[in-house]
Image (cartoon, rainbow, N blue to C red; front, side, top):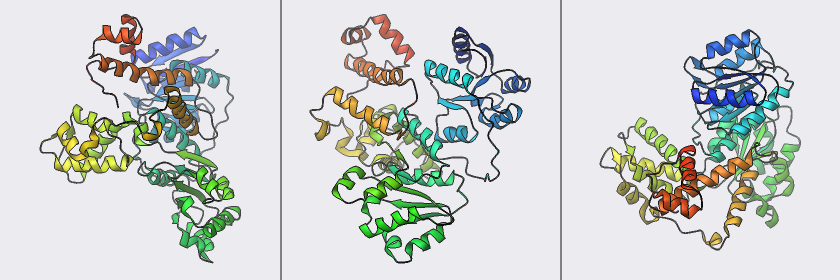
Length: 454
């Protein structure tokens, strides 16, 4: 790499690591813990690429992006942030950041993106004349890799005109995502209309819908449940939408490929509505988000009048172990009930087990996967990860990212199985004890935690 990189991060370790890595790669580096200093450097014409954290002691890195674009049109800015929420991804996309990586980031991946930014010729984006006010918070919670991927996809498709299909099991939050895509898009000041089969079957129904939505967002829930006549009318609506074309968004918890095979869904409708697809993961696919979601719902319940409650670590473990067939909706209802029924400020393991019942213990393997080989299970989850990206490829650096995803739970489970004895654990894994210690430190694994098999 050849060029000058400006690094702004309040974490000294991150500044040191990035400075060393970029210098070894052939770059000149200026690193600072101050946005004020960063903006001075930008104003002086220094730097070919900026790498900036969001939350800094003297300001917000995302809020500086318009000023950077004004001072230095086309200067690539790579945003890194521990504030791994959908809002961070959306704001980074809308502020025309060159790229966005959530912390903790993969260093080789960041280096690749920096090299790409150094070689890119960027054109300064035009200011949006139709920008409107919007809410500042969006209640999509999750820091897992699958949710970070979903956040990035939402940010990319939010302001396109492509029809959109949102899929996922009941209770995963499809309706919330559909509403959010409208509320945070350029169409947010236009109508948000739900269409049902009665609206579509009526002779004048489609024309009334188009007049009502007026170029806003038209939502169709459970696409495969529409009768044949309604599906045919929807196809015609999408082919000839009129002068003020709406954004078509459909949602479904069904397997639409099977629905097409069985004849319940027209192929031409599926291919029209699936301009882009967002798959919302089930809660069991992002177990690491459960404590974060539970804390959010406790705060929400308290704001609505429930007493102040906190989860004990043992109660968190009960929630993590549960199968959650009703997904996030079931978790919210459970947490609200715990907030009201717990006898003390701290919600205990007994409290959680009393509400969840006998299923609160370790769950048996699903009948369909009981005899599944490990390689088949891994392959199934990998395919789901690729499917989450639709027509796009996952971000580069996939190999090392997946190794970390497997390595952390493997070491945690092995430690739990050996009672926290690192010598036995190292022997079980077939690695040197010093190697195990280093991995525990690097992966930030809590040795004292007794993680049980799920």
